[in-house]
Length: 100
Image 1 (cartoon, helix red, strand yellow):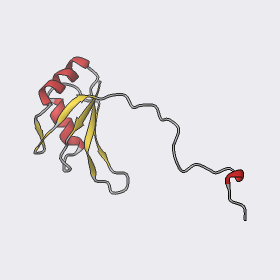
Image 2 (image 1 turned 90 degrees about the vertical axis):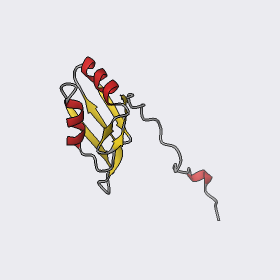
Image 3 (image 1 turned 60 degrees about the vertical axis):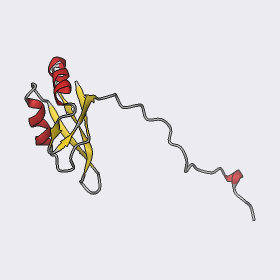
């Protein structure tokens, strides 16, 4: 099960997440999401646990608890919505140009 962890401290690391969730069972991955350019934490992360029973116990046990000094919001991650068409900034056809 993929688990969302929100309201993370900007100082939290992948290891901090892993350590908190391993007390409930096996953790496949634990990732704090970071800004692509600055490398700074974005304040949330994801944990993957293979056993749904352990994952549900972790969600119930850790929601509202402190990890690195901040109470976190923990719930099952929603699937990413499909990427739609990009909007705005489109190409103009030649017929739309003002002619001088």
